[in-house]
Every structure is written in structure tokens, then in C-alpha cells.
Image (cartoon, rainbow, N blue to C red; front, side, top):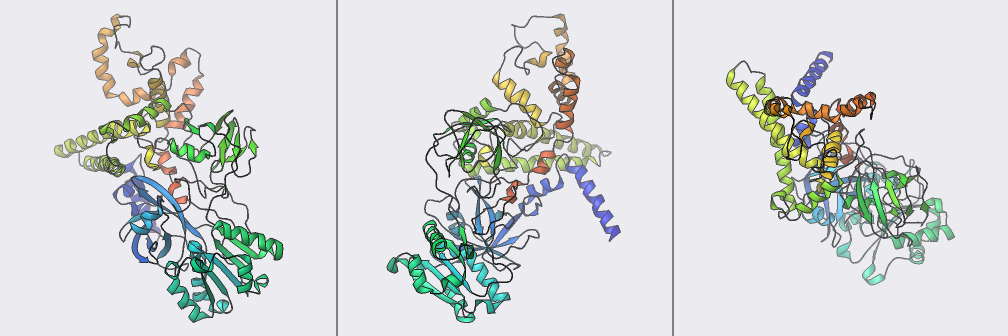
Length: 603
């Protein structure tokens, strides 16, 4: 084992030489998403129609995946028109089963659920997050169980029932399940529930609301007279859960009721909106009345951490730097600098400028490409060359194809150069690396760092996470080029790109004899261009003039330039999406870094 381990380590080191500054995992993920260890994927291997609008998808994780507990949920990421969208769904399979099952009900007008329920079949790939949630059975299982569900609220309970049947069938003897849906045809898991009730002693009560009306606490008490003596797990629409919570608080033991909510909290009136600045990326967004900071930031292209999007899991917590925000659930005003706020349930105040800090993705500050980024987004709407007139899925395929070609040429060129003693190999390897560098600098790095592809919400292709094989790291480039150059274009003394202070590029510049040598040092500069730019970004002239300490220039390079691919190692957010739900026995959650997409639960 020691010998094999040593060989494996040497193989990883050798692979790193070929792929640096990327990691081997970056290349593997480019070739096949299922091979990625940092962004877990799963393949859809089967689907089963439950009702006309509900489908169960069977997923096989590409890598060992942590077993869920019955009742927990998992994050599912899927591309919709080229944009990564994340939602969370209850796992409905038995924990530890070879295949993970999720059951999705298509929400009319939804973004993700119709795609998963009707448009995702065997062979499709989805991203998958770890299991989470507190809506689970305790150990030991209570003797008297009551389950109350409605609509898709049956999904977490179905996993509990299947696990009890497989491991402790005696616990279902005497248990009661009251399940509501419009008609028998709409009843999710109808045949499976009837079969389970017939084989275990579970009492199944079906309530078809189209004829019997919605379930009320009084009707539940008539159906299950001994409800106060039972431990109850309830999941369904907000109205039903509110009624049950109030009923248990008045007439029962609130600690015996365990509630799982799918819907976000209602918005409290009082916030009039305002402007919010996200300090890590520098993106400025206008948040309308009642609009969460998260929704406003994502609409403006910010890549923000998120989880439940309901103000429960604390994944989205940011730091208020200045201004004020209002809690959209309670109306509470927060205006103390340094206070933590949840961006998914906080809105900006119109009378102040709120500045919230995103999930940090690099250690280098500096102004961002605000003006140029917005310009790129405007141009994308009307310039066919930028994809403005093409479907988003076409643009998404294009950029990923370019990334695959660039990485293939880079790794292939390095491999061929191992045989550089053979002249054709030297020529081929050098040509491959040349084309790879042109693609990376001009088509990838420059455009991605300008925010041209931020609309995809893909952490692998985003201006806040992208790094390139360049002597000047992304943060320094965005400061000198995106901000200074695009803000002060051709303004002498402000635009540091204007001839890099060594060339005469306009007649307005005073002529000096040294410019006669310009063609010569242009050739020399072309040979060391990247390193010259990196040295230029250190602002040595400011240190010489006493405007900046020498240590600051060195510290900037140490922080930013050690290994440009560092941020690619940290881009693990997509696999950590979680939906926090409400349980009457909830323990405090700790923040977990993640980055997912759009508001809502299963839309």
C-alpha cells in the first residue's frame, strides 16, 4: 500500500506539472463533469411518473456521496437556458440505497421544476449538494406517530416511511398518515402508499380536497382523536402548517409538532428600496421595495452565497459596511456598521447607501469593472458577435467549448514538448501553447474578467472567481485595466494603459529623442509582455515618489501572485447549496459557504 500510495502521489505531482496553474481536477471537469471532485455531479439513470405533474428522478452520484437521513433534502443544480439554477428537493429514497431519488412537482410558470419534471431524462447530468435538514425522526422512534402532509409535502415523509418499512416495520403498526390532495389522480405516491399501508399496519387517510375541502385542525381531531398523544411530523402548504402550529400551541404540546416549510416568509411592508454595493466585486445594484439584497445582487451579476433563501440557514450572511438595511420579515432596521445581515431577507433603505460584503473569493481588493461590466452587458443585448441575438444555451456552449479547446491545447502542448529534442514535436508543442495563450488572454481572461459571462451564474466562469495563467493576477488586472483604463480612457495621468508610460501614442504627447528607440523596445516588450505588465501593476513609480511604501508593492504581489489558480481551488460553492427548513426543534446553524442561484423554492 505504501508503494502504491507513493506512485499515486508522484502521478498527481506529474499531472500538476502538466496542468498548472490549474489543478488536474479542472481539466477532468472540462472533459467530463462527472469526473470533478470539487463540483459533485450525478447522472440521471431513471425516471418514474408519479402523477401528470410529478416525476421521480433516480440519480447515480459520480463519486461517493454522503448518505442522507430520511426527511433531509439535497441541492440540485441544473442549467436552464445556459444559466445555472439551484433548487432543493427532499430525498425520497431509503438512506444508503444505490440510487438517490428526488421527486419533483412542476410548478406552473416555474423556472426549474418544469425542466426537471418534464424535460430531464436518463443520461442528463445535474449538480448535487450534500444532504441537510433537521426534519428527521429521532432515535429511538416514538411509539405513536402521526404524519400530516399535503401535495408535495409527502416527499420528506415518504423517505421516513420507506426507511421504517425497511429497518423497523413494527414502528409503523398504529402509525397514522393523513395525506391531502385535490383528487385521487393527483395523489403523489398514491399506489405506493396504499401498498405500504396494506403491508405494515400503517393507517392511511386520504383526503381529496376537491370534494372534502381543505384539512382543518378540527377535521384532523375528528379523524385522529388521540392526536395529542402522538409525535407529529407535518409538511405542506403554509396555511395548513400555520393552522396546525396554532392548534398545537393552544390545545397540545408544541414540542411534539415538527413542521417542515417549503415557502419563504412573507414580506413585511416598510422597506422602500435603495442602492446596495457589494464590496468584494464592487457591483452596484438598485434594490426595489421589498426586494432582497440577494435578488438585486444576482440580477446585477453578483455571485452571492445562498442556501435556503428564507432567512434560516445563515449561509448568505454578509457584513454591513455602511448605510442601513431592513429585515423584510420583521421590519427591523439594522444600521450599525459591522453587523451581520442575511441578504436573502434584508432590503436596502432608500435614504441610505448600503454596502454589504459578499462571500470572499480572493484576498486582493481594488476597484471593479463597474462601468465596463455594465457596458459589456448592454452590448451583449445588441451585438451578435457577443451573443446578444443568440439563445443563451448557444452562448454557454460556445464559452465552454473555447475553455475545453484552450485547456486541451495547453496540456497537449506541454506534453508534446516533453519530446522537444525532436524538432517537429518542438514546433507542434510551441504552436499549441501559442494558440492556447492567445485564447486564454483575449477570448477568455479579458472577457470573463469584464463580466461578460456572469449571467450564467457559473462559479467556474465568473468575474469574481476566474484566474488565468498570467503573471498579473486577476485582481491586479481588474484594478489597472477594468477600472482605471475603462474609467479614464486616454486621460493622461489617469489611464495607466496609455502607452504604459513608455510609448508615444498620440501627437499630443511631447516628443522626446528617446521615442526614436520605441520600435526597438517594442520588440523587447513583446518578449516579456506579461511580466512587464505585472511589474507595471506594482506601481513602483509611486513607491519611488514616496506616494506608496515599498512594502505595499511587495505585499500586493505576495498576496496576489503566488499562484494564480488559487481561486480555482476555492471555487467549490456550487456543491454546497442547501435549503434550510423550519422545524419546531431547530438548533442554531453555522454559516456554510455556497453559491447558488435564483429566488424561490421549487419554481
